[in-house]
Image (cartoon, rainbow, N blue to C red; front, side):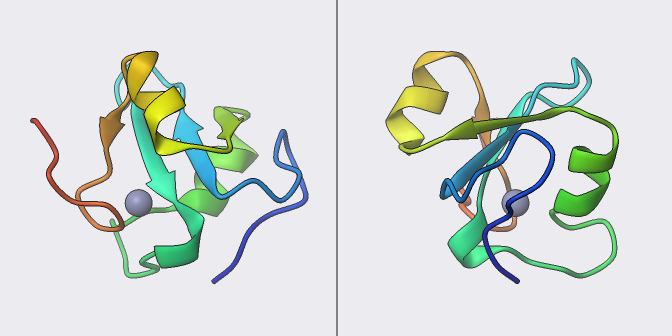
Length: 75
Ligand SMILES: [Zn+2]
């Protein structure tokens, strides 16, 4: 898959899911598209996507790593 230019995304590498049940950040350059993996398009469709250009910035705002595309999830 690839970076997105829809929803709130404009080609940024990282997408954070701001849904309060998820609060995790994805690396679109390493997206995993299996069922129940990243589900990026579902996040965008729900309006829960927030773009980041760096993983560090997303982490500073409290997002956890996605287990599939980044790893080292702390949950
Ligand atoms: Zn992911």
